[in-house]
Length: 391
Ligand SMILES: Cc1ncc(COP(=O)(O)O)c(C=O)c1O
Image (tube, rainbow, N blue to C red; front, side, top):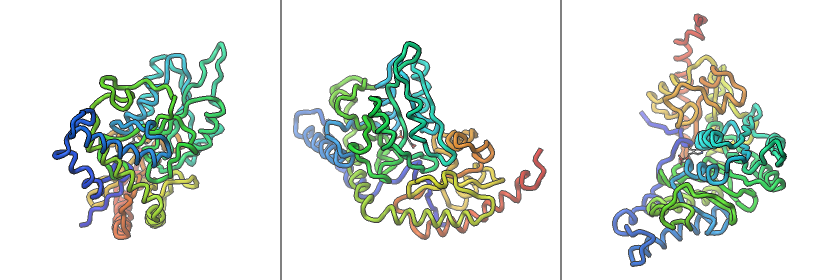
């Protein structure tokens, strides 16, 4: 039985080129990039080269790229590093838990929070962000930071971050973008996005796990999360993960090429075929329909189906998908993203995310379209809801 992986938003495999680029830096070229001797300089050159690639990817200065351990660290650094007690912070109710849990923590430290809800199609309305901005008055704390994700990990909806960036700039507010799901799917240009901070993660773009980068616009006051050595211009202490950084650099280089070589169009065509095939099943609908979405993602509700049961049934038939985000798998809580879009608990629990790899094939979609209708039919036949016996 073929195994088809349709959970690219959870993570992606290394591409062979990434593996090859990283290989020497585990053993032969093992130097510490801070060492003066030759081994150290080889490692330093490799880190510098990766930084050049990221600066090109972001259209920013090399000094504005800070390597770190991934999306969670980037998001945490932006929030903990900028906000101080007495500030007001605006973010959205559909962010990843890396932002939402950090938000809860700063709220406990005396920071006022506004969580902006999405429209029913999953889009954040820039005007809702504008309305949430607070000037400093005797009664209120001034808005210091806005954080909005570029692409939602569950629905693939692409947020209007450029417009939000303009609003933030007019009001003189720092702006952070969680671009973990957007990198490699939407072009990133720091000059156009108008953000001060932007997080990405290597493992979502066929790079290694546990490495990422935070763009920090020159002059943005960010207190480091980790202190110690003077690595990364004192913005992130700790011996550089040289193989990881090299892998991130290579993954970014390949992602840049894939933005321009027709890959996204090919993936979008496969996703559209998959989506149309699944929508032919009665009682199905797309969450986020009508909003701009990334090429690789579709989030589908299956009426009268328990999402977790469908994930397991599909896995047994060789198709890997997820309900909600991977970080919450194992919990029975319905997706906070879908609930924020107005779905009730049952509809949210009955929704699955199909997210295609850049390397997805026609055969992957054909296999999925053979097994999904069967699995749905089977579960509905067993369902007490479908049989009308639910209490
Ligand atoms: C939107 C978003 N932000 C942040 C993260 C966390 O990134 P990492 O796994 O690199 O910590 C993820 C990962 O699922 C994500 O999808």
